Image (cartoon, rainbow, N blue to C red; front, side, top):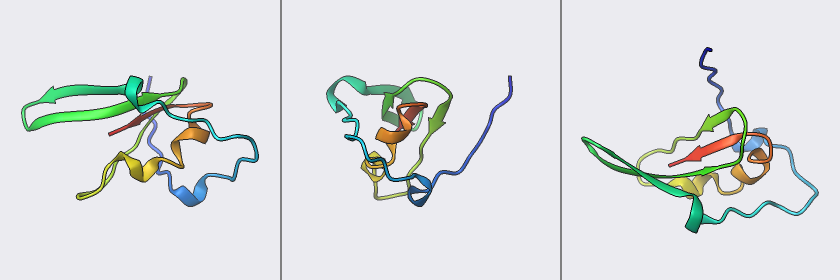
Length: 79
């Protein structure tokens, strides 16, 4: 098994006509303890994983409109 890496931009996600999938942030939040500190993340959907990243001074809310349509077909891990 290899690792596939793809860059995803908000403009690359097509508009979805159906009702958007809501993310229940109370149940999907997880934590992992690392030497530099704690990372909290959401893990939603099933399938091939997509790990989202964000820059300094922003958080996973950056991906709030991108994750729901992708979570229908992919596992989305959002810090």
